[in-house]
Amino acid sequence: MSTAKKNYKKVTTHSLAEMKRNGEKIAMLTAYDFTLAGLVDKGGIDVILVGDSASNVMAGHETTLPITLNQMIDHASSVVRAVDRALVVVDLPFGSYQGNPTEALNSSIRIMKETGGHSVKLEGGRTVMDSVTRIVNAGIPVMGHLGLTPQSIYQFGTYTVRAKEDEEAKRLKEDALALQAAGCFAIVLEKIPAHLAKVVSESLHIPTIGIGAGPDVDGQVLVLHDMLGMNTDFSPRFLRRYLNLSESIQGAVSSYVGDVKSKDFPSEDESY
Ligand code: KIV
Image 1 (cartoon, rainbow, N blue to C red):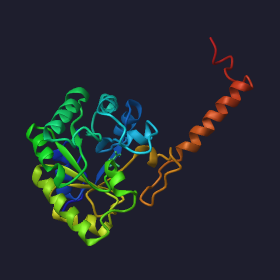
Image 2: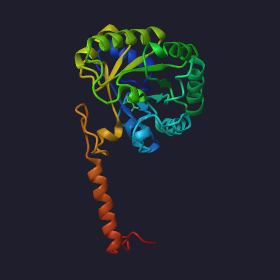
Image 3: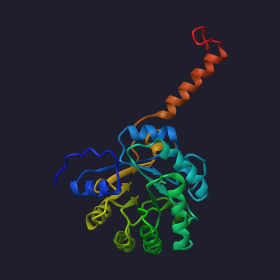
Image 4: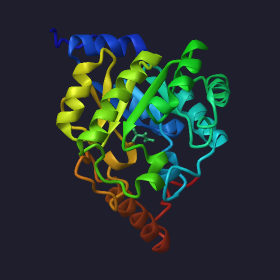
């Protein structure tokens, strides 16, 4: 197996399959707006997820449930305008696909037509299989999402690790195979034991992307605002912070406030 990194000018679902075959890990991050999406794309990310975590991160809701399809479309079209290289995946929000396969297809078509995104993501296993088939048959690539699926938080009751028990682990393995058979091009595995994520990843020919699923998956995803350290209240074990932006931003704002109050800003050079 070669681990040489190929230079993809534009990342497609086919590139991701090739990365898995070549043993090259896939790097995915979320983004929700034009400015940050452009920076993330220039940083060399393979996949940008316009996640329904926008409900938490951008809108301040406690869960992902309140965000609407129209709001997701607004976020996704801003992201797409900024992106040259990455594959853009857009979350189908809660309530936009669970009703039936026709509803799922219509929501996916709206996302593709109105945002220019490249694919959609939905949560669930065999219960959403018919919807996955319907969307894929319309020519729209679909990413699955198993394990901790935040749209079902009120059914789970907590955000703790899923599939620790044999029965749920067995169901998850079967769901992953079912999503692959239905035509998903990749599957997110969220907050499950590392050994289970490894077994699932080895059982599939499509890539798995983990968040809190250990190292033996085909790629990793984090929420951008969390890995940039913009949200210090959220510190799960799986999160690695690459910056402490909350401190930098608050520091910059308080320096600015000080400069305005002391009349140091603007100077003569900063005036016309
Ligand atoms: O919405 C989101 O950010 C996600 C990731 C956590 C995978 O679904």
